[in-house]
Amino acid sequence: MSDGNPLTPAAFQVLLALAAGPGGRAHGYGIMGFVAEVTGGEVQLGPGTLYRTLTRLAADGLAEELPGEDSRRRYYRITPAGRAAASREASLLRRLVAAAGDAGLLARPESA
Amino acid sequence: MSRPVGLVPHLFVKDVETALSFYGRAFGAVELFRTVLPDGTVLFVELAVGDARLLVSQEIAALDALAPSTIGGTPLLLTLETPDPDDLARRAVFAGATVEAPVTEMFFGERYGRVVDPDGHRWALTTKREQYTPEDIDARKPHEV
Image 1 (spheres, helix red, strand yellow):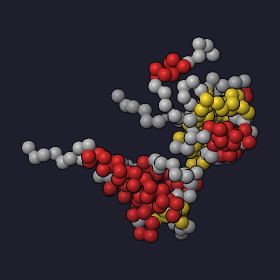
Image 2 (cartoon, chains in turn yellow, cyan; image 1 turned 90 degrees about the vertical axis):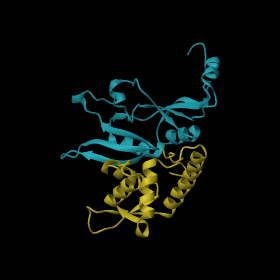
Image 3 (cartoon, chains in turn orange, red; image 1 turned 120 degrees about the vertical axis):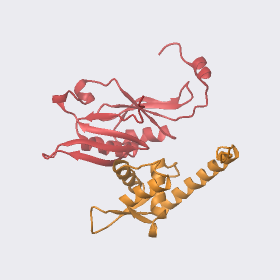
Image 4 (cartoon, rainbow over the protein chains, first blue to last red; image 1 turned 180 degrees about the vertical axis):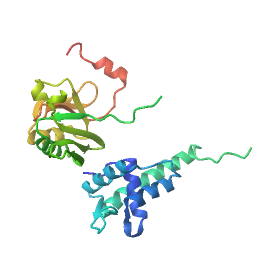
């Protein structure tokens, strides 16, 4: 499904949280915590968005649910296809951020 | 002022499973979750269609929430944007849709066609090319439908 299509922001954030986790895996609360921490609380993935995003990523073969003993603490792992998709998105974002820097959007405010 | 952040069609159908099968085969819809009543009635199913959300429910006569075939038509046209409307139309027809308007180049700069799904919901399938300015489109528009 996600054959080179751009990822939604939520999909990218979840894949990023998985890629950053040990062994490319994380559980739901871990993903929400990671995203909140990295964005300084600016992005809060609610449980509903997280569940929908993970289900969609799994259907697209970008992430997979790991069989676990505790159904309340489900673990997910990024797949090679998920890593490739997240990598592509990260490269795109890097180009955009570089352009934002050139445009002066990332300039630190001069001390008064 | 609070600002809407999404627009989600909620379709009522004669039979949810038949509809889900169609949306899956035709549009690659993925079921995200469903809410089932204790008696087994599927209250609604949330689907992902591309990046968009779609809700599907069994028709509920008591609430006057009826499927198109019960009403005898629909006032709503659902427009699906896709890179390849020809392919999507082929898949829709293969899954049981009928062609209302074949996919063709339109004056507004899109390749566009319409199909009717087995429940009677109407879908437009179109590219989003945007190579015409509003002035171009205005100059190209037909004088009547």
